[in-house]
Length: 209
Image (cartoon, rainbow, N blue to C red; front, side, top):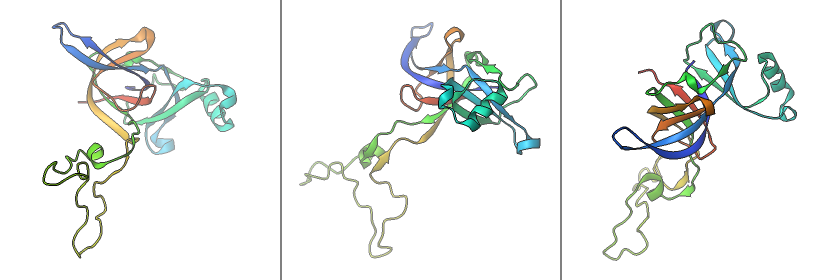
């Protein structure tokens, strides 16, 4: 198994042997628990369901309580199913997975929900450069420009880039490098930035090259 559920703790920097500054993101990765194993014979496909972050039993619904009891684990807040993972005989219901399943130098992909930025204009949302600042322009500096057509088809084409709600979308960043692992504190340090805000939940999966 080469995937974990993690919580984003924030960004910092490390220095390599040559003194080069490396921006990194620190994740609390695991411990996660196997709560369900899906097989082709029963479910039609292979997948592992992992659970992360414990929660109070009184806040757990009866169907989920039975689900966790079957796996012999305490109630968990986050459940995530991972497909395209290697399932071997050592993986059993209730097994604990920790950050040591990764190694320094591994290439991973991280998925999460990007920061929601609310309603944004075309300049911020799509990178429009805005109108010119000369020749009498006074109120069109951040305007999107023309969005329509002539008498035909006399409408705004679907998918035209315009102002609107920005962020809050599922984003996956690939080809990220694991630069440090701290098994004692369940910390995974990844080079570069990943989607989501601090304390946000992300999904880390080893990328096969």
